[in-house]
Length: 258
Image (tube, rainbow, N blue to C red; front, side):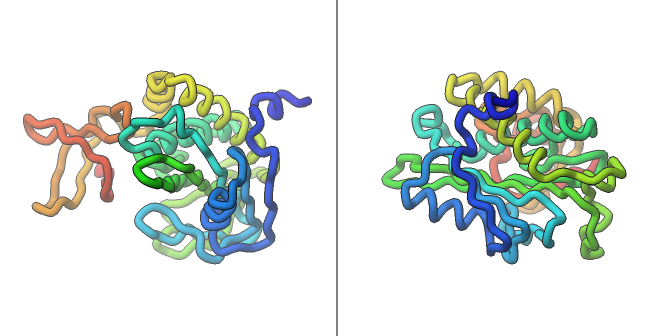
């Protein structure tokens, strides 16, 4: 058994490969609701309705990226956690950045809350969606997209998006990238299961692109708020210094000014 397969700890025993689907997250959620085991993976060659945070479209052209979703059932480890999907997102971000570095040598970094970047450009994104019933966590579908090959991005995305092929001038092998991501994710999920949240946060801080000290802004019900990012807390919230006050940002759209 290969080192990667051993590290996967059972994740990916069942993989559904689809030529095309609306959203791998939707397919994985349906499988989870039907009793699919933890670690079940859905991968598609393309998505016609891929999405990111706040319902944004995730561009998913044929054979240009790795589009996948994993069924996670971390109920015991995440019991009582304030925002389980946010904490899993941090762990997944670390895993994907580690996998990209291992496979390509690229200096992938993390941008709160869910972007993997190379320099100023986005390489990968994560969307974790939790299913609750009666206040109890049932499962989390962890979706991620990694740009593998250069493609014709819309003008509004072209300056902010990159791919592994564009950064390395080499073809990107989808199967290898998926295997390394699953293995790295299994390592980080082991930290979650054992309650080693500090290990995940420490790794996230080491890979983070702009924390601490970066200027950020966001729109609140009271208007535009500006401050300096200081850290990420154990629940995945961004801590921002606004004047004399430390604000805790858990949702909304944070813009990184510098």
